[in-house]
Length: 141
Image (cartoon, rainbow, N blue to C red):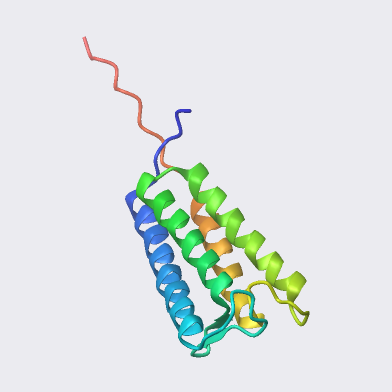
């Protein structure tokens, strides 16, 4: 598979999004464990006003963040698109479980917004047009 690499600015943006998600996911995981929550606690730990996640939600967020960071490090548009899709699947899961017992990720509407923002942002970066390499100029006689 010969996938063209992305622009360095797009790569940096993907890495920034992945880093933000990693910090948020790790922080909610630490808070949830510190509160003594079970793996599938319905109401997850609250990270300020950003989101709620239980330990499983924190683990999934950290794993998706690692995938996002790997996609940014490799610089493959296809991997960035896959990471975007994974964040969107996590968002759909939050919608499906919202207000129900058990809530697998312990997420709320703010968690949904966080996941959708990451999925949409990564999708925009993954599908961004890539500059084409200019052909070699023909030698002049």
